[in-house]
Structure formats: structure tokens, C-alpha cells
Length: 397
Image 1: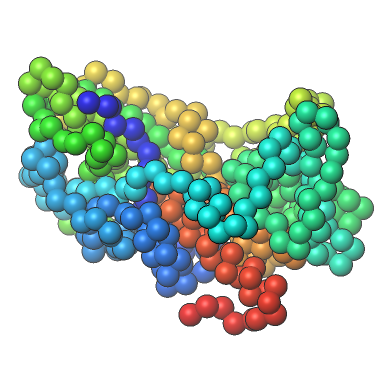
Image 2 (image 1 turned 45 degrees about the vertical axis):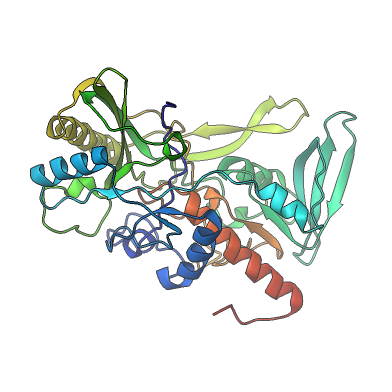
């Protein structure tokens, strides 16, 4: 049986995530009800498997395949509930891989150009995007792909690199740099892992290797209610090892605060193979994250004890930023161009028709895997872009 991976988990952000109450990060420029229909659209497309749990910190999703706990999962849930009556162990929500490129090709509107290295976003004198300047990776000749709409979804850091590279007399620091926040507020989850050997686990189908138990807000496990504020969650996987034993893997993700000193800039001297400046990355966990990590260590140790697992690995310090591969921030969205790069619909304040819809746009991170929110924001931005092109002004209900 294949060993499960820690991917393909899809969770919505809640009201406390989008509007943090502690003042340590800005509120998102949208409300949960504005994002809900786009979450639902993406979840239907994913054919999400899981269950609805009616938790404020983990908003319900549209589930296509309702799961029931396996014998092993039920045993884990009962052990956790016995140890912490106020904790919530729920079935993870996951989607199987699907081929979006094939679906796009079926529309007859997809054109793929191989070997095009994006170098710069071109904007005209009125602030309207014109296209993307690229370098052919074989001939090294420069060419421009013209379009009145450009979506940057290159990953948080690469999208921001393109914005920083897009300099002109009007945008000396790059597109979106006038706010002073372009490249700043880089985040990645505070990740710690525990692994160990436990009692026998039931078999499950290889096609369901992505299923897990999710412990949202496990920081609040000792309380009867889940309080507002920032916390951490744990994804728990357990599978048989073939010797009447099992292996348990628990990965904890906590939120990283957005701080201006965690940033990316264009390196003053280093270039990539095409002569384009690479990024210089300055990012480190602060006292807040280190304190949260120590809480995660305690929680993972207690979790192993509660479910009868002997630990063979327990991270004592978090993996360096970038290890969780949930990079967010550096081109955040907001309601004011003086302190954000993107408007509430992910459009660059300084370039009409230019949208950034990957993790770069996040003002704060939450403790959830960011993928579902990235996909929902992209769908919402696409609808907004089409309205703008067609001259409509009212958002979709």
C-alpha cells in the first residue's frame, strides 16, 4: 500500500481568518459571504470528499462524496475525544487529481507556448496592461504576448518577481511598488511533524490515501469552545505497516504573522540563465512563531500519548520558512492603494487588467492549506475581469 502524502487537503477560511481581531494583520477586503459562492464553485469542480462539521473555525464545504470514518479513524476520534472532550477531530476534505489543461483544451480556446520565459509585464501610459514580454528559452529572442487581460498565477514569489521586474519611469520600483508593500509580508506556515508506531490499523483502499483526520484549532483542545484568534491545526494520517502495527504521521500547521521585514527583493548582482535578476529572500520566524512552535511540540507529544503511539520523530523546532510550501504574501490585496498592491478583486491598483491570484495576494494566512482559497479567488477574479471587459459594473450575485 502506498504511503499517504500530506497534500490535496482543501479547507475554507473562516470569518476570524478574513478579519483577525488581534490587530496583528489587516482585514481582508472581502467578507466570507462574498467568497462563499466561489468556494462552492471550486469545491463542486474538485468533487470534494469529506463531511460537513458545522464548526465556525472550519466553514462547511460543498461535499460531493460524503465520507464515513474507517475503523482506524473512529478509534482515533474516540481516543482524542476521551482525552479532550472539547477537541474536534473531523474527517479531512480532499480532492483527487484532475487535469485542468485537458479541460481547457476541450474549449478550443487554449494556446500553449512552450519555452516562453516571462520577463516583464508591459503597461501603457494610461495604466492599462498591454501584455507580457518574454524570452524564448532556445533562441533567447525577446517577444511580447499582447493581451488586455493578464493573470499572474506563477506562485507567490515568482508573481511578485515579475511585478518587481516590471519597471518603467512611471513605476520605478515595479508595478504595485508605490504602496511600499510590494515584496513585503512574506509568510509560510509554521510546520512541525511527529511520527511514530502504533497499534494495528484497518486497511483502506489505495485510492483513498489522501484521507486523514483533521484537528482544527488544536491549540484550543483543552477548552469547551473554539475561541477566536489565531491557532494551529493538525493533519493526522495512520496506515498499517503489515506487522499488526501501524505508522502514524501528524503534521501541524500554524499561522505566520505578516511582518514587513520578511520580504523579497531583486538581487543586485545574481541573474538566472536568461539574464533576469533572481530574488533575494529575507525571511525568518519571529518570537511569536517560535512560541507557537513550542505549543505545537507539546500538542503533538500529547496527541501521540492519547492515541497510543510511540514517537520515533518529533520536531523540536519548526522547519525553516519555505518548507511547508505554503508561501503567501508579498503582493497583498486590500481596500486602499496606499497600503496594498491589489484591489479587492485581485486587480493591480497600478495596472488595469492585471490580476494576481496566487498566494501572493494574501493579507494574512490562517492555519489552513491555502490552495482552496487561491482557487476561489481566481474564479472570482476571472468573473470580475470579464465584467470589466464587457463594460458591466455590477458583481455577480
